[in-house]
Image (cartoon, rainbow, N blue to C red; front, side, top):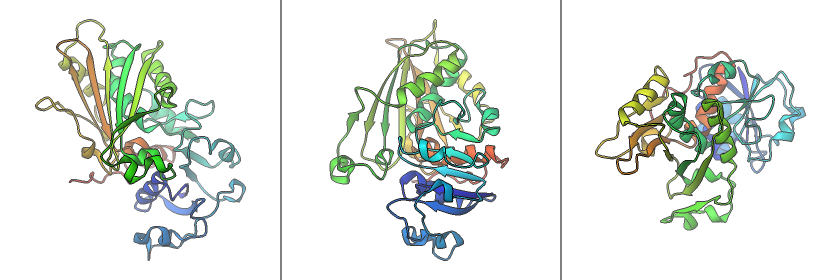
Length: 330
Protein backbone atom coordinates (compact mmCIF):
# COMPACT_ATOMS: atom_id res chain seq x y z
CA UNK A 1 0.00 0.00 0.00
CA UNK A 2 1.35 3.42 -1.01
CA UNK A 3 0.88 5.88 1.83
CA UNK A 4 1.67 9.49 2.62
CA UNK A 5 2.01 11.51 5.82
CA UNK A 6 1.16 15.21 6.02
CA UNK A 7 2.63 17.03 9.01
CA UNK A 8 5.53 14.62 9.08
CA UNK A 9 7.77 16.89 11.14
CA UNK A 10 5.31 17.27 14.03
CA UNK A 11 5.20 14.96 17.02
CA UNK A 12 2.26 12.96 15.68
CA UNK A 13 3.57 12.85 12.12
CA UNK A 14 7.07 11.77 13.10
CA UNK A 15 5.62 9.03 15.32
CA UNK A 16 3.54 7.84 12.36
CA UNK A 17 6.67 7.82 10.21
CA UNK A 18 8.52 5.75 12.83
CA UNK A 19 5.71 3.17 12.84
CA UNK A 20 5.05 3.10 9.11
CA UNK A 21 8.62 2.57 7.91
CA UNK A 22 8.59 -0.79 9.74
CA UNK A 23 5.09 -1.74 8.61
CA UNK A 24 5.06 -4.96 6.55
CA UNK A 25 2.32 -3.80 4.17
CA UNK A 26 2.88 -0.04 3.85
CA UNK A 27 5.38 1.91 1.79
CA UNK A 28 5.88 5.59 2.63
CA UNK A 29 6.07 7.41 -0.72
CA UNK A 30 4.98 10.93 0.20
CA UNK A 31 5.86 13.30 3.05
CA UNK A 32 4.18 16.68 3.45
CA UNK A 33 5.25 19.50 5.70
CA UNK A 34 5.53 23.24 6.01
CA UNK A 35 8.56 24.36 8.01
CA UNK A 36 10.62 21.40 6.74
CA UNK A 37 9.59 21.57 3.07
CA UNK A 38 12.59 20.97 0.82
CA UNK A 39 14.49 18.82 3.30
CA UNK A 40 14.91 15.11 2.88
CA UNK A 41 13.51 12.89 5.61
CA UNK A 42 17.05 11.77 6.40
CA UNK A 43 18.03 15.40 7.05
CA UNK A 44 15.14 15.76 9.47
CA UNK A 45 15.47 12.25 10.92
CA UNK A 46 19.07 11.05 10.60
CA UNK A 47 18.14 7.48 11.56
CA UNK A 48 16.54 7.16 8.10
CA UNK A 49 19.86 7.72 6.31
CA UNK A 50 20.46 4.85 3.89
CA UNK A 51 16.81 3.81 3.82
CA UNK A 52 14.54 4.49 0.82
CA UNK A 53 12.27 6.70 2.93
CA UNK A 54 15.23 8.85 3.92
CA UNK A 55 15.63 10.08 0.35
CA UNK A 56 12.05 11.43 0.21
CA UNK A 57 11.90 15.21 0.01
CA UNK A 58 9.30 16.85 2.23
CA UNK A 59 6.76 18.62 0.01
CA UNK A 60 4.58 21.59 0.81
CA UNK A 61 1.10 20.06 0.96
CA UNK A 62 -0.93 20.91 -2.13
CA UNK A 63 -3.78 18.36 -2.33
CA UNK A 64 -4.14 18.53 -6.11
CA UNK A 65 -0.49 17.54 -6.53
CA UNK A 66 -0.73 14.43 -4.33
CA UNK A 67 -1.40 11.47 -6.60
CA UNK A 68 -1.16 7.69 -6.54
CA UNK A 69 -1.69 7.17 -2.81
CA UNK A 70 -3.80 4.41 -1.33
CA UNK A 71 -4.03 6.19 2.02
CA UNK A 72 -2.99 9.52 3.49
CA UNK A 73 -2.40 10.32 7.15
CA UNK A 74 -3.02 13.98 7.98
CA UNK A 75 -1.42 15.10 11.23
CA UNK A 76 -2.21 18.81 11.19
CA UNK A 77 -3.30 21.20 13.96
CA UNK A 78 -7.03 21.35 14.54
CA UNK A 79 -8.56 23.89 12.17
CA UNK A 80 -5.99 23.33 9.43
CA UNK A 81 -7.15 20.18 7.64
CA UNK A 82 -10.84 20.44 6.71
CA UNK A 83 -10.52 22.56 3.57
CA UNK A 84 -7.31 20.86 2.42
CA UNK A 85 -8.55 17.28 2.81
CA UNK A 86 -11.79 18.08 0.98
CA UNK A 87 -9.67 18.64 -2.16
CA UNK A 88 -8.21 15.12 -2.22
CA UNK A 89 -9.58 12.47 -4.61
CA UNK A 90 -12.49 10.45 -3.23
CA UNK A 91 -10.58 7.23 -3.92
CA UNK A 92 -7.79 8.18 -1.52
CA UNK A 93 -8.47 6.88 1.98
CA UNK A 94 -7.75 9.42 4.70
CA UNK A 95 -7.00 9.17 8.40
CA UNK A 96 -7.25 12.62 9.99
CA UNK A 97 -5.23 12.56 13.21
CA UNK A 98 -6.30 16.14 13.98
CA UNK A 99 -9.64 17.30 15.32
CA UNK A 100 -11.42 18.74 12.28
CA UNK A 101 -13.61 15.76 11.37
CA UNK A 102 -14.68 14.06 14.60
CA UNK A 103 -18.41 13.26 14.48
CA UNK A 104 -18.75 15.06 11.14
CA UNK A 105 -21.10 13.61 8.51
CA UNK A 106 -19.23 11.35 6.10
CA UNK A 107 -16.45 10.62 8.57
CA UNK A 108 -16.15 7.60 10.86
CA UNK A 109 -15.02 8.05 14.45
CA UNK A 110 -11.96 5.88 14.92
CA UNK A 111 -11.61 4.55 18.45
CA UNK A 112 -11.59 0.90 17.46
CA UNK A 113 -12.51 -0.78 20.73
CA UNK A 114 -15.70 1.19 21.36
CA UNK A 115 -18.81 -0.98 20.93
CA UNK A 116 -19.74 -1.33 17.24
CA UNK A 117 -16.91 0.81 15.85
CA UNK A 118 -14.60 -1.82 14.36
CA UNK A 119 -16.88 -2.79 11.46
CA UNK A 120 -17.60 0.86 10.68
CA UNK A 121 -13.89 1.65 10.53
CA UNK A 122 -13.15 -1.30 8.25
CA UNK A 123 -15.64 0.02 5.68
CA UNK A 124 -14.60 3.66 5.89
CA UNK A 125 -12.69 5.88 3.46
CA UNK A 126 -12.75 8.95 5.70
CA UNK A 127 -11.62 8.32 9.26
CA UNK A 128 -11.46 10.81 12.15
CA UNK A 129 -8.96 9.70 14.77
CA UNK A 130 -10.04 10.29 18.39
CA UNK A 131 -8.48 12.96 20.55
CA UNK A 132 -5.76 11.91 22.95
CA UNK A 133 -7.67 12.65 26.16
CA UNK A 134 -10.87 11.01 24.85
CA UNK A 135 -8.99 7.84 23.91
CA UNK A 136 -7.97 7.28 27.53
CA UNK A 137 -11.23 8.37 29.16
CA UNK A 138 -13.65 6.69 26.75
CA UNK A 139 -11.91 3.33 26.92
CA UNK A 140 -12.13 3.44 30.72
CA UNK A 141 -15.79 4.49 30.82
CA UNK A 142 -17.26 2.56 27.87
CA UNK A 143 -17.70 -0.85 29.56
CA UNK A 144 -19.42 0.70 32.57
CA UNK A 145 -21.89 2.64 30.44
CA UNK A 146 -22.48 -0.32 28.16
CA UNK A 147 -23.51 -2.43 31.13
CA UNK A 148 -25.49 0.36 32.80
CA UNK A 149 -23.27 0.42 35.88
CA UNK A 150 -22.86 4.20 36.02
CA UNK A 151 -24.97 7.26 35.30
CA UNK A 152 -24.04 8.96 32.00
CA UNK A 153 -24.63 12.43 33.39
CA UNK A 154 -22.35 14.52 35.59
CA UNK A 155 -19.25 12.43 34.92
CA UNK A 156 -16.03 14.12 36.03
CA UNK A 157 -12.80 13.53 34.09
CA UNK A 158 -9.50 14.75 35.51
CA UNK A 159 -6.67 14.11 33.06
CA UNK A 160 -2.94 14.80 32.81
CA UNK A 161 -0.88 14.89 29.61
CA UNK A 162 2.77 15.07 28.67
CA UNK A 163 4.11 18.13 26.84
CA UNK A 164 3.98 16.51 23.39
CA UNK A 165 0.20 16.78 23.68
CA UNK A 166 0.53 20.50 22.91
CA UNK A 167 2.15 19.79 19.53
CA UNK A 168 5.59 20.70 18.25
CA UNK A 169 4.23 24.00 17.01
CA UNK A 170 3.07 25.04 20.49
CA UNK A 171 3.88 28.55 21.67
CA UNK A 172 6.51 29.61 24.17
CA UNK A 173 4.11 28.74 27.02
CA UNK A 174 5.01 25.09 26.40
CA UNK A 175 8.80 25.31 26.22
CA UNK A 176 11.14 23.48 28.59
CA UNK A 177 11.63 26.39 30.98
CA UNK A 178 7.90 27.12 31.13
CA UNK A 179 6.86 23.52 31.81
CA UNK A 180 9.70 21.93 33.79
CA UNK A 181 8.95 21.45 37.50
CA UNK A 182 5.44 22.80 36.96
CA UNK A 183 1.87 21.51 36.62
CA UNK A 184 -1.11 23.56 35.50
CA UNK A 185 -4.67 23.15 34.29
CA UNK A 186 -5.75 24.60 30.96
CA UNK A 187 -8.85 24.90 28.81
CA UNK A 188 -10.94 25.62 31.90
CA UNK A 189 -13.60 27.73 30.20
CA UNK A 190 -14.11 25.28 27.35
CA UNK A 191 -12.23 22.40 25.76
CA UNK A 192 -12.77 20.93 22.27
CA UNK A 193 -12.65 17.37 23.59
CA UNK A 194 -15.80 17.82 25.73
CA UNK A 195 -18.38 17.60 22.90
CA UNK A 196 -16.41 14.74 21.35
CA UNK A 197 -16.53 12.72 24.55
CA UNK A 198 -20.18 13.52 25.23
CA UNK A 199 -21.19 12.40 21.74
CA UNK A 200 -19.27 9.13 22.09
CA UNK A 201 -20.68 8.44 25.57
CA UNK A 202 -24.22 9.16 24.38
CA UNK A 203 -23.86 6.62 21.59
CA UNK A 204 -22.74 3.98 24.09
CA UNK A 205 -25.32 4.80 26.78
CA UNK A 206 -28.21 5.44 24.40
CA UNK A 207 -29.14 8.58 26.34
CA UNK A 208 -27.84 12.06 27.17
CA UNK A 209 -24.36 12.25 28.67
CA UNK A 210 -22.74 15.23 30.37
CA UNK A 211 -19.30 15.64 31.83
CA UNK A 212 -16.92 18.07 33.45
CA UNK A 213 -13.41 17.81 32.05
CA UNK A 214 -10.20 19.37 33.29
CA UNK A 215 -6.92 18.92 31.41
CA UNK A 216 -3.53 19.35 33.06
CA UNK A 217 -0.07 19.61 31.55
CA UNK A 218 2.65 17.81 33.49
CA UNK A 219 6.43 17.91 32.94
CA UNK A 220 6.93 14.62 31.10
CA UNK A 221 7.42 14.06 27.40
CA UNK A 222 4.51 11.73 26.65
CA UNK A 223 1.65 9.91 28.28
CA UNK A 224 -1.91 10.52 29.50
CA UNK A 225 -3.63 9.47 32.69
CA UNK A 226 -7.40 9.99 32.80
CA UNK A 227 -9.09 9.61 36.19
CA UNK A 228 -12.86 9.47 35.71
CA UNK A 229 -15.49 9.75 38.44
CA UNK A 230 -19.10 8.67 37.97
CA UNK A 231 -22.17 8.04 40.08
CA UNK A 232 -23.09 4.35 40.24
CA UNK A 233 -26.51 3.09 39.24
CA UNK A 234 -27.43 1.24 42.41
CA UNK A 235 -24.88 -0.40 44.67
CA UNK A 236 -21.52 -0.89 43.01
CA UNK A 237 -18.58 -3.17 43.68
CA UNK A 238 -15.17 -3.00 42.07
CA UNK A 239 -15.39 -6.68 41.10
CA UNK A 240 -18.45 -5.92 38.95
CA UNK A 241 -16.63 -3.05 37.24
CA UNK A 242 -13.72 -5.33 36.36
CA UNK A 243 -16.09 -8.00 35.15
CA UNK A 244 -17.73 -5.53 32.75
CA UNK A 245 -14.37 -4.25 31.47
CA UNK A 246 -12.91 -7.71 30.92
CA UNK A 247 -16.04 -8.83 29.07
CA UNK A 248 -16.01 -5.71 26.89
CA UNK A 249 -12.34 -6.00 25.96
CA UNK A 250 -11.98 -9.78 25.85
CA UNK A 251 -9.54 -10.62 23.06
CA UNK A 252 -8.60 -7.00 22.38
CA UNK A 253 -4.86 -6.96 21.63
CA UNK A 254 -4.19 -3.42 22.88
CA UNK A 255 -6.35 -3.07 25.99
CA UNK A 256 -5.05 -4.34 29.32
CA UNK A 257 -7.47 -4.43 32.26
CA UNK A 258 -5.24 -4.50 35.33
CA UNK A 259 -6.02 -4.61 39.06
CA UNK A 260 -4.99 -1.82 41.36
CA UNK A 261 -2.04 -2.76 43.52
CA UNK A 262 -1.49 -1.32 47.00
CA UNK A 263 -4.07 1.32 46.14
CA UNK A 264 -2.21 2.36 42.98
CA UNK A 265 -3.62 2.58 39.48
CA UNK A 266 -1.92 2.19 36.08
CA UNK A 267 1.17 4.17 35.10
CA UNK A 268 1.55 6.16 31.89
CA UNK A 269 5.06 4.74 31.51
CA UNK A 270 3.64 1.26 31.02
CA UNK A 271 2.29 2.35 27.61
CA UNK A 272 5.13 4.60 26.43
CA UNK A 273 5.96 4.06 22.76
CA UNK A 274 3.06 1.66 22.21
CA UNK A 275 -0.62 1.41 21.24
CA UNK A 276 -1.52 -0.09 24.62
CA UNK A 277 -4.15 1.18 27.04
CA UNK A 278 -4.13 0.17 30.70
CA UNK A 279 -7.44 0.35 32.59
CA UNK A 280 -8.19 0.00 36.30
CA UNK A 281 -11.29 0.49 38.46
CA UNK A 282 -12.25 1.19 42.06
CA UNK A 283 -15.16 2.30 44.22
CA UNK A 284 -14.53 5.07 46.72
CA UNK A 285 -15.63 3.54 50.04
CA UNK A 286 -16.63 6.88 51.58
CA UNK A 287 -18.65 8.40 48.75
CA UNK A 288 -19.63 5.33 46.73
CA UNK A 289 -18.35 7.05 43.57
CA UNK A 290 -16.97 4.85 40.80
CA UNK A 291 -13.39 5.59 39.73
CA UNK A 292 -12.26 4.50 36.25
CA UNK A 293 -8.66 5.05 35.20
CA UNK A 294 -7.06 4.94 31.75
CA UNK A 295 -3.33 5.25 31.04
CA UNK A 296 -2.03 5.55 27.47
CA UNK A 297 0.76 7.11 25.43
CA UNK A 298 -0.73 10.31 24.00
CA UNK A 299 1.31 9.79 20.81
CA UNK A 300 0.41 6.08 20.74
CA UNK A 301 -3.17 5.08 21.52
CA UNK A 302 -3.92 8.79 21.75
CA UNK A 303 -2.75 9.61 18.22
CA UNK A 304 -0.38 7.90 15.80
CA UNK A 305 -0.52 4.23 16.81
CA UNK A 306 -4.32 4.39 16.96
CA UNK A 307 -4.25 6.01 13.50
CA UNK A 308 -2.18 3.09 12.21
CA UNK A 309 -4.58 0.60 13.79
CA UNK A 310 -7.42 2.34 11.94
CA UNK A 311 -5.46 2.36 8.69
CA UNK A 312 -4.83 -1.37 9.02
CA UNK A 313 -8.57 -2.00 9.25
CA UNK A 314 -9.36 0.36 6.38
CA UNK A 315 -6.89 -1.31 4.04
CA UNK A 316 -7.50 -4.96 4.93
CA UNK A 317 -4.20 -5.39 6.81
CA UNK A 318 -3.99 -7.41 10.03
CA UNK A 319 -5.15 -5.03 12.74
CA UNK A 320 -1.95 -5.41 14.73
CA UNK A 321 0.42 -4.96 11.75
CA UNK A 322 3.28 -2.63 12.64
CA UNK A 323 2.06 -2.34 16.22
CA UNK A 324 3.40 -5.46 17.86
CA UNK A 325 6.43 -3.98 19.60
CA UNK A 326 6.67 -3.73 23.35
CA UNK A 327 6.50 -0.33 25.05
CA UNK A 328 9.70 1.29 26.29
CA UNK A 329 10.58 -0.84 29.30
CA UNK A 330 12.29 1.67 31.55
